[in-house]
Image (cartoon, rainbow, N blue to C red; front, side, top):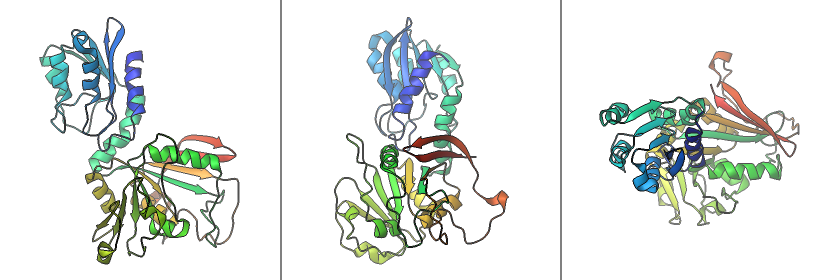
Length: 349
């Protein structure tokens, strides 16, 4: 792979998880074999990667080549089209690693008609990076990662509900890192009642995702600590209209839907600018997400323990027995050992 295109992809990866419903993009401007500008799209609504790189390059962009992780955009959104900036800067050649299949874009034609050479240099690494973004945009839902911490026999707790702590402190630190890479973190009312969690990122300098709670029946009394710290907003989804009248701080937003199905919540989150969602909940909510078929990434942390019992807190439960051709299908993307706990990352097939 061309090293400058690789640089662009790495810049995009550095910004993954912080661009909302927009894709993370990296860009590098090169002239006479030397990098004269680079950029990454850092936040939804802010300058795109190509614009940042061209602004840094300044006059040196004239006659240069720009490398981009994703095909430059041609549409007006919160910012002007990147192809316009590329043409105005006097770029001679554009090389990109992945076509933006979420848009019916005539970008190549626009650039070529302006006398600019365009090369689509496909990179599997870029395709993998943008796969979830394309799926999410086509469905109008966030990219969803579901995380569970379980015993070797797949239980999140004993039959008495004891769950702290199945996994070790090393896993907690890894979970904090994942939380920080998502726009929002979702859990259920049962987890809030049982564990009274704060659901924050306890790592220096990292951003705090919006915390989302699913409480269909409106049973929470809003006295738990998650509703009283001011680190980040809390959005509570419910079907109970009476929840709207409960006293709560300005940090808490109660959202009432007629049907709090997983897909309805995901659509609402997406329209509120949530592009990536990290689900960290008990068996009930985790099972609902798996049955919704909206989970793109499943992360399982296995502790070297066997809990036994009836399986009341088995992390995946269904009311009926499913045939093998109807079950959620995943493939193992990566595995590692974290202080004697096994982390398995799976991707939806």
